Length: 123
Image (cartoon, rainbow, N blue to C red; front, side):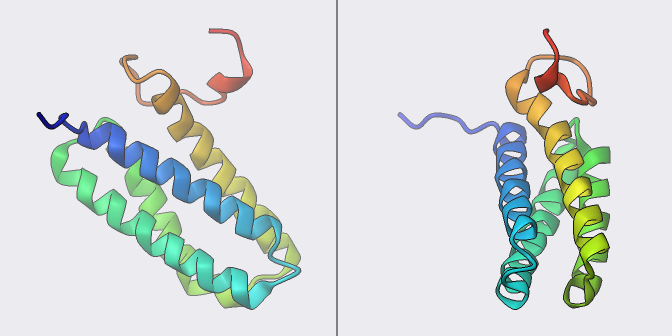
């Protein structure tokens, strides 16, 4: 018997992993800008796909997923023209999104759409 897959949790997990990958590339961007930009582009496209797939399912994080999608599309258009300050800014934005999704993965039963820095405080 196959186990049912929770589409929301699957999507949040995939978004989370993809944001982690983007963070890693941004942390190494100065050393390998063209290699990292190519990989980041792939991950940004995947974020766009994941966000679009969850919208019809009325996932509770749809507002956040819509924000992530807009961020990903905007980032794609500027990816090959990043200076050091822009890389740092994008890295901070990526971490902020990851932390939001992280709360949903750690506490899937909570009835809220925003967890903030829940991993930093006692719950």
